[in-house]
Length: 316
Image (cartoon, rainbow, N blue to C red; front, side, top):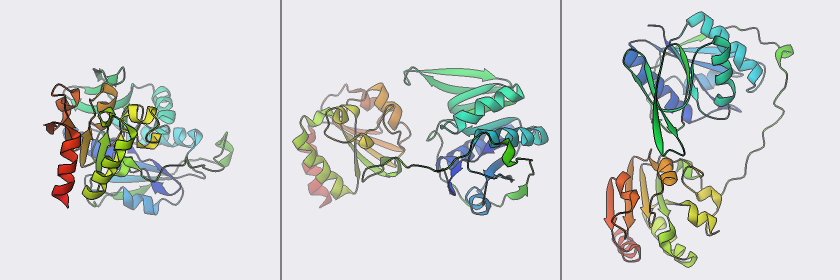
């Protein structure tokens, strides 16, 4: 079978960390299909980026030199040309603002199916993907012929990797300045708070069970002693007790820490959608029927105002 083609995402010389999850998804799929996993990376100064994606399980890395940062006008002819050469069984990209820009266009130009925002991929005699709908309330299973273009949800696959020995190969595409209808002049970074919860390995998250803003002092004291960053469910942010960049969930940040400690969080569907990629979920809630316990690896039914002080004493 022809290879699986993965499209690496980067910006301003840095690899999007979720690209490693994309590569793991492609390697897993290529193993099932008994074929090779190839990666294409497009842009300028690609040598360092090529090393970042040269991981175990990747067979070949295709380097396409382009005169600018990402633009729709560059990626469309570059990927289309490489597709015509390789005839890959599947094209996988990230379901980000960038991937969602060029991927549907690629599928349309190549006249092949487009499967967006995928959280699971299986194969029997055809590709079967899982796609969540209605704020993750239901899951749809969709079967498709191959080839197809798939965008995968960031965080749906692990980003752990080990070094590989993929072959690097330059692929020439005529992408002149005249083909560009627009250029990226600059990037303006969105200000973030003092903590980036998307990269935190241990999160202590608080919900409305904290009762009042003054009780956040107990949360921050506990987090400090156990070495955790503090996050929260939406009601805490809506109340103005913590800033938006601390919010976990469908309308906040989707996280994938090693340990997620949920304190006083009931577990709405939207919140669970944002935490399900956590490796271990531990919950403390006085309501034994709280939905958060359905997705927790460990649960404690009890009063957080008794449990957290005991936890602080234990860690001292």
